[in-house]
Length: 472
Image (cartoon, rainbow, N blue to C red; front, side, top):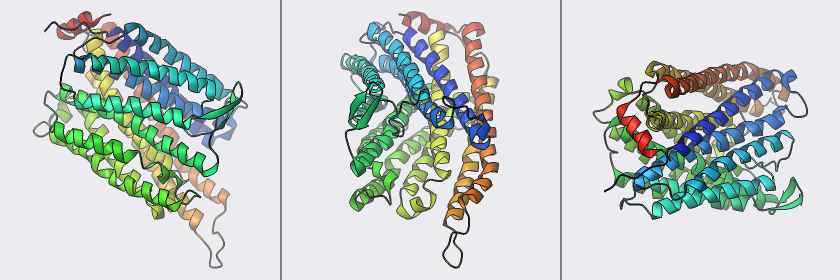
């Protein structure tokens, strides 16, 4: 069979822009963490916590996570299907429209235009841009799969399609709104219906943006980087269909103890607990694939990122269902335990896998060996330590908050005022700042290593062939 002429130029571009938006997100994250302990660092009206925080989350989710997803999906789909992208022009349009959308989103958020919905703050004109972007991406990926030369569909393709279809449905349904001006709209839903629809979107956005794409990357990069096959393709398929089915019912666990009907809360709680099984199916698949290969944790820098990443995924999928139990949710909801949980997922799971995937791609699309493996190892330890510092400190802060909020005197009055609780949080918030700075330094090391790879890295004969043959 004639070797396909892959398009790697577009992959390079998405890698570059995904990293840029990831750096922006982390820098803004450090700034807003400083604003929590030093309120004087809020500069109204544009640079306050209330405007920078959604910029941080949107740049992280839609700039870094989605940008990396675009790069990896466009790379993987060609190789798993053994065919070139269906449309190079559509991919190039997607790149420029992606950046236009992210920039527009950042500007409108800083100007204060927001729907106030968590993870879906963008107003209706930007929503339309997101839909156009996603449709262009979806058409290119799906058409490439349809015209594939490889008969068997590897598990990564299933996760890719689930992400594409899932995001499309979730974003459009939750984004239904009535425009009243150029940058103001009101939700098409009201009251508890609005809350229920939104958290159906919110939690399943985690599924389709921050779970399915990293799993697609993990299942592709792990066997490629270790040289051994995934332990069980059958297990991966069973875990996939179970995960996709169960995730769709879990969103209301964000609404426990609210006016949402009890049966909806109970259904979400039950499916959240059941979600442990398919999630750990992928964790076990990863671990069992390493049988006889655990020495690679020392010798192969990519394996460190991948295995620690899937381990954090396993921890997330134990902690999440635990938080979906009513009694535990009543204790820790609204405390700093929740951002600790989120950051363990986004930075411990999603970003670890994304970093490994980019490390895998860059030498292959540029035809050069990685500039420095020791720097890659330094990057690994910096982001691991930084992430653990802020996660553990906020776990402790969350438990302390919950305990102080619920403590009562003998007469039933509250034992602590809100301000007394706030004062106790400051050491933990400073620890978050410190951990964030360490993580940021790790990302800077990562970027330096990649820049030096493209400029001074030694030419790799095999990678050079790949890059030359795949150039658009």
